[in-house]
Image 1 (tube, rainbow, N blue to C red):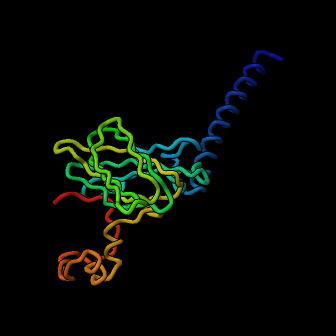
Image 2 (cartoon, rainbow, N blue to C red; image 1 turned 90 degrees about the vertical axis):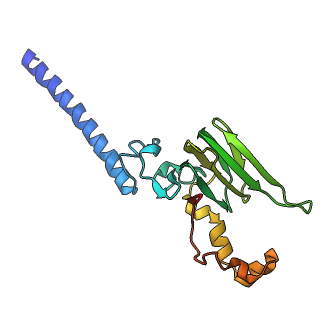
Image 3 (cartoon, one colour; image 1 turned 45 degrees about the vertical axis):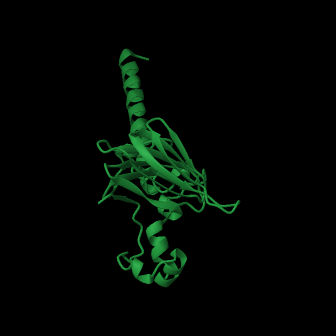
Length: 214
C-alpha cells in the first residue's frame, strides 16, 4: 500500500468514526423524542438534568420532577424524585399519598413539619418538628403531612424521593380538595360547628400543591 493509500485509509477511518458518533447522537435524540422526552434533559438513558427542567410555578414556590413520563428509565422501577423550592412564607399543601412513602432531604434552609399517622390505640399521634439542612424526613405511605419554610429570610430547598414512578398528581390528595368534596353539613357535624362556620371557605375542588402565608 502506498503512502497516499495509507493516508486515504486513515482519513476514511476518521470520517467513519465521526459519522458513527453523529449517527449515535442522532439516534439517541430520536429515541428520546420517540419516548416523549426532551433530549436536552435526558441526553443519556440513565441521566436526567433535573434542575434544568421546566418548573411548575406556584404562588409560594416551584416544583421540578423526574418520573416515568420524562425519565423513561424509571418505568417499572418504583421510583421518582422531585425538587421542591419554597420561598419565604411558602407552604406545601397538607396532603397524603395513597400508594407511596416519601423521603425528604433538606438541601438548604429550615422546614417545619407535621406528620399525622393512624390511631391504633385510640388517639392520633401528631408529630410536629423542625428539620434543618442535611436532615432526612420520612413520611410513611398514607400518612397525612405538610411542610413549610420556617425561615423568614431564606428559601427552602427539598429533594423528595417517592417509591412510585408515576407523577406526583397521580398519587397526591390535598386537604383543599378533600374538604371541599364533602357536603358542608357533613363537615359541620364532623367538626361540631354550625354550617355557617364554613361560609368563608371556597368550594372549588382543586389541587393547591404549594401556596404561601398571606
